[in-house]
Amino acid sequence: VGPKDVDIDIHFCGVCHSDLHMISAEWPSTFAYPMVPGHEIVGVVKSVGAEVTKFRVGDHVGVGCLVDSCRSCEGCTGGNEQYCDNLVATYSSLTDWHGAGPKTKVMEGHGGKESTFGGYSQAIVVDEHFVLSLPPKLELARVAPLLCAGITTYSPLVHWKAKELGPKMNVGVVGFGGLGHMAVRQSMAMGNNVVVFSTSESKRQAIVEMGATFILSRDSAQMQAAQKTQHLIIDTVSAQHDVVPLLDCLKTDGTLCMVGLPPEDLKLHAFDVVGKRRNLAGSLIGGLRETQEMLDFCGSNGISADIQLIPPTKLNHAMVALRKNASPNRRFVIDIKEQMTDGDWEVEPDAEIKVEEQKIHPKAKVCPQSAVHPAQRQ
Image (cartoon, rainbow, N blue to C red; front, side):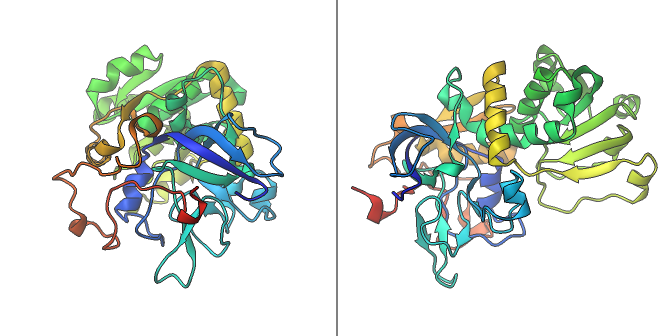
């Protein structure tokens, strides 16, 4: 543990759709395999470095998608570390900064660079700047998804002034899975008029019970009636889909913000945006300051995620369910502290996971392992 490090005993880690994309190599980026996923981490401080001032042993803390950055660029100094060109992600981020962030491992074939290990683990060590305080009134396991899903939806809501405008703002949410239900809860708490676009009639009741309006997005009549009604639409869907009908639902100067990450290119024409001066934008998680603000906001408004707790042994089954969208509007969360000992790392196989069909490193498998570097173990 370095002078500014916080050593965290992990209790829970959320299973993010990003983890599925990453283990399947579906994004056009360079990552290191084999990897230890997990960037929705909550736990208890086990020890701190001599220069740590914000945390003490026993504090409940969280770690999200970032564990280091340059701290000097425009993004970092402006509180948007997520846009730093030299950011270090919580897992599978290759870095020359040996020892930066969580414990790392030198990866073969990457010029001596090290790769960060994520939260499907028993412990993690992170610089205090990238550690977050958790709302004391919220259940620890249900806070975990806020570290990615929560900030992913909160940041664009704040940026496009949904929090500021309250009932004067019409907000659409596309999809009602893990991200979508979080966006609805946050937007409702901000006082917005919320509409949910979903392809699934089965989600109508849950959406209406939350106080939002349901629109069946595969019903052309309902979509036509919704045209030119929304100031902001947050698109949370990670599967391939047509965004043009959603753009048609925007008012003049309205914005469709992508936070889901489909693996293939979007298809649209310039005329789809120029006619009403519509904006197609994107947003990536949030900086540390905004993430702490989000956690405080959720704590004050009693917002946490609907979750399905799983033991580590069920992780492969959770990945298959994610692929099938078989766990609607719930986030899988791994119960690490209570259901894992040093001998319980073996994950049950799932017949639908065929590593040879994945575009991943031959050594990779869907299996958690400890992120604590051997040299750090006592």
